[in-house]
Image 1 (cartoon, rainbow, N blue to C red):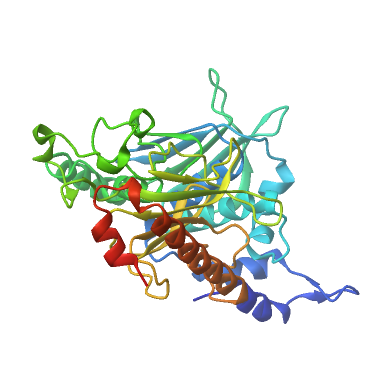
Image 2 (tube, rainbow, N blue to C red):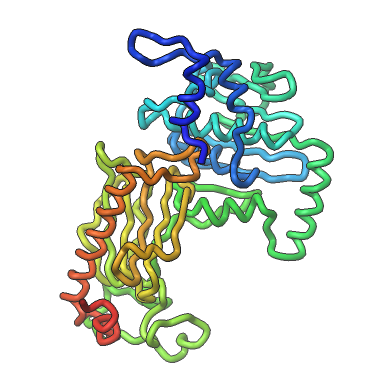
Amino acid sequence: MLRIEDLLKDLADDGIMESTGSFTLDPKKAEEKLRHFSFAEPHHYLLKILQCAVAGGATWVKVRIGAGKVCVEFDGDTMAEGEVAALAGYLLSQELAVEQRRFRHLAAGLRGAAACGPEAVIFDFFTGSRRVRRIWDKAGWRPAECPGGNKPAPHRFILDRTFGQSMTTAREEFVSAIGTGYTAEEKMLVDRCRFAVCGISLDGETLPGPRFGEARYPGYDIGSDPNPGEARPPRYIRSGFIFKDDYMVADHHLIERLVPSTVDFPGCLPLPVSEATLRLEPPDSGLCRAWIAITAALDPPRLAYVEDGVIVESEEDASDIPVAGFHAVVSTIGLQKDLTGFQLVRDESFERQRKWLREQALEMKGRLLEELALFPNRERIGEVLAP
């Protein structure tokens, strides 16, 4: 794992020490050190651009993936020329304010895109008074003339593929069109961008928005059921759906808590539509720092760590959490990550959050066991979860 701390220590030899104990880096030397920066998967640069959009307050993102180029357009807060010109500093800095993290996402995305070896990487942005373009190509990272147009998007990222890359991508798109319907880049967006606050469209098609859990069965509304403890799906819909114990779908939330964002624990998750049987103190509005639940499947605990709409890491069997069926989607803002932003550092902050998740799981299990009368399959739930 290439961590920011390790790179800064290496770069310190090339820096100029200041009275504060920090150091100023030569941009050329910093770029030389970053030359080998790379993601586990080359297409991950696209996730970082999307994270930049979400962290910058975008309300919409439009992604178009073609044989010749990749284009991402989005709205959101304006950017200053100096902020975009000095992106290496944001990528390396350890002291970024929470509201500056979009520039680290952007820096990693542009650097990762350049590492793919395209003809050029282009970023157009709006400063509040004019549009500015910067290009990363064989000539380096430089400003360029920004073309005009009718109502251009406030921000636009373009990866201009080489001829060879275009031919390879065209073949992938043809195979995808007669198979799964998604190229590798498209599938990555569908799989890992399920929790974005803003709407995302891919080649003109709107991706599904954030969702957390399902109704007990299709068409069921717990709010209008005076006796949920005996609710059983009609026979005509039992075939063709996956039910647990013939009573409810596996991803139904027996109990659920949406934990609001705070200044000390910032979140990036929107408020999802809740269809859980038990909802613990749901917030009225704002972002969440965690969604937590116990699902009807009562499978091994699973976790999804999310930052600005993108799944950073996921665990399908979190064996240190002693509650079957526990499911959590957790914001990673404030947690340390490696230089790519896609690998969490298992440090004290991570362990503190993990301990909190274990405590939440046990508390929710206790509340659920107190309310077993609300569930038609209460005998099995009690057997699995009872101490």
